[in-house]
Image (cartoon, rainbow, N blue to C red; front, side, top):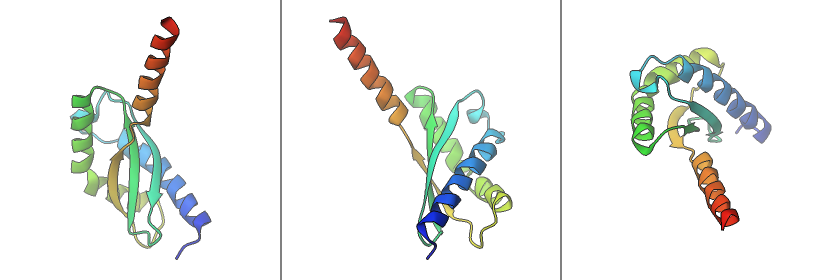
Length: 116
């Protein structure tokens, strides 16, 4: 089992590389869409990583982008294998990180309270 420090370094590198890989994808659903890789959570055995993405747009756009990312999963994993030096490249699980939407909703509520 890798030490927690090693897992943290792997997670940071996955986030960095995933940002580059996603920005270079040619899928039309991903064009003109702000996609941010917020974090990665890799399992101790390194066989799976959850990649958290934040997507700016309405619910329909978010659904389309998540579907496009899912369809590109094999390509993204292959590119990740070229970018980082690991014996086993983890299986990718996309997770929508909606913390930005939650904070935006909270700010709107706070603004409404201040206005009243």
